[in-house]
Image (cartoon, rainbow, N blue to C red; front, top):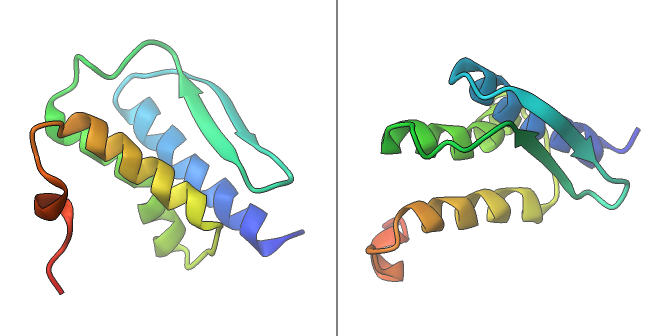
Length: 99
């Protein structure tokens, strides 16, 4: 099996586990041969506190990194886009980490 697809499986499983933790039933988790994937859950997370919504979006990358699994760069970029939607009033410079 392609190690990147395995990494994506860990990534999506991270999202699914946190969704279930917050009471959002998972209805579909998918991984395509091209490396795309996703996790769909019932309803919306809008009722959750903002920090919980961040956790839900960051859980995929956290699981992937915890198990030292690689994946394509799109998985983390999609999560980053999800974070941006939660922080519309923050500028791009404020979002960038300082190194």
